[in-house]
Length: 215
Figure (spheres, rainbow, N blue to C red):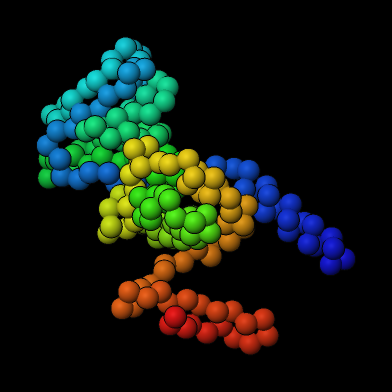
């Protein structure tokens, strides 16, 4: 019977991991203009001439009450010189300025985070640990975002996200390595805390209650 339940739990975890999960990253806020380009052409949500334009410059006057969604026909899309995967969403705020959000797959997001937070030449174990920490923090931010139009910031106020411009091959291997495990605990993602530049970790003994330790 124990083996049956263990097998069922593993099946559910793998099934959860097979699905994709998006995350919405605030790239820029309170902008008066934004330039978006792609050599392959731009797909602009809701427009029938999608892919004909290779560059557009948007101002608050060119964005209506509904967000404008833009992505590259193929490859990455550039915003103000930086490259990104997925969609760029341009929203006009109540103050009349622009908010730009990158809506993309969580795995693609992690590729642009891991080596933006630590050097890509560090040991693989360090890259693995950063991928785990980045995924956990991102999921926590998504679960607690409430009604705001993005889940997480692209700066040190959350965790640094360099987009496609920040990706390195070594980091790509590590970002997806723990996907199955994190799909199983996604509902228990947490906010890591720092005290005097040291992490606060939580230990869960098997037979006793949990305790929080400053390491």
